[in-house]
Amino acid sequence: MTKPVVAIVGRPNVGKSTIFNRIVGERVAIVEDMPGVTRDRLYNKAEWLNHEFNIIDTGGIELGDEPLLAQMRQQAEIAIDEAHVIIFLVSAKEGITAADQEVVNMLFRSKKPVVLGVNKVDNPEMRDQLYEFYGLGIGEPFPISGAHGLGLGDLLDAVVDHFPTDLEVAYGEEAIKMALIGRPNVGKSSLVNALLGEERVIVSQIPGTTRDAIDTSFTKDEQEYVVIDTAGMRKRGKVYEATEKYSVLRSLKAIDRSDVILVVINGEEGIIEQDKKIAGYAHEAGRAIVIVVNKWDALEKDHKTMQRFVEDIRQEFQFLSYAPIVFLSAKTKQRLHLLLPEVKKVSENHHLRVSTHVLNDMIMDAVAMNPTPTDKGKRLKINYVTQVAVQPPTFVFFVNEPELMHFSYRRFLENRLRATFNFEGTPIHIISRKKN
Ligand code: GDP
Ligand code: GDP
Image (cartoon, rainbow, N blue to C red):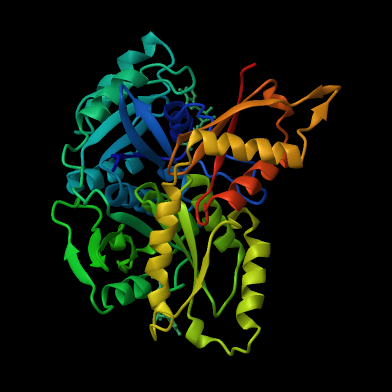
């Protein structure tokens, strides 16, 4: 499902990140610890009155050391490009500044709906200062206090009112939505073009796609695929497009809308830190994953080159040990035919459902092979296991003491699940719940 996107724009120190955190709330994600992956607080899920949306803190996108006004312009531009509704944040403490005025003019010209939040209205007496903000000409100012969590409900009501109603895109039920992520120049656009240019591929631009993203649908061997958001890969030549945080933002947006993620690596250059970070986001999102090593034509190869590359990837992306690897060249189309079958396979595995009795038999065997751990004289007892979800396959283990389900035993169980069923290309979530 496509969710609306909201962006917060405003001068430094008006309270953007405070408000962002308030709106996102303290969500506890079901993710394992993953060394080496930092969580950026610039793009996150949020919810208000049954409306789910994603929110961007444009202040979190560092734009180098350009002058303040240039940075604010770029942040406003990002909001205009990426969001359906913009929260323009000002501060009652400082009043309207020249920079505020400048940004308002840009937002105004863009015709995107803007909701004006006046932050730091910490007590009712300060409401008198609101009148000044009508002067910005973007409608009613909503008094809020990020510090005290006041006024956010009214602000969010106004935001939700502006959500577009035409976001649902009609893909075929069985369409596999895929996103290509990777740092700039690894060959993502070339790969999309190569896929669309293949023999027996029927391409259709999807009508009704939202104005911000152009998805492309194509059919190969009777399977429909949708490439998510190739618009993001079109070179628009804006200054901020080269910044790392912006490319992370684009990746997160694309991941959010996809079923299968192709993590694209430049085979010519090998793996660098930024690749790991991007792969980490893919893993955290719980989507099916294929690792693609592109530019395979550009390498001097001997009979061990591929094996060495596989070892490198397994070493560097330990958290993606389940993802298959495809080596190919978008340029020469060498080995390109291997990709879509792999995409289809991981998508099927992502949907795989195991029947409860087969699952419990398998777990009993696993426990017989490797007894459950004990702690302070108490032994973990697994009473019952059931699969509660697909995409990704999620298993709930009902146990006597959830704390006894240590990381190493969890990993053992995951390995047994993987050895028994075909979960190649999909993460697996294991949840333990107390039930005697
Ligand atoms: P950003 O640069 O726009 O992301 O602003 P921050 O969220 O980092 O906040 C800047 C400063 O304003 C911090 O010291 C916050 O504690 C403070 N601040 C944020 N919201 C409020 C508020 O509602 N009232 C007051 N008095 N201070 C606030
Ligand atoms: P993106 O930024 O990830 O979308 O990368 P592009 O598709 O724009 O490709 C970046 C550069 O790499 C371009 O100059 C492409 O011609 C080149 N390139 C893409 N795929 C291949 C490939 O398979 N082999 C070689 N040798 N070059 C490639």
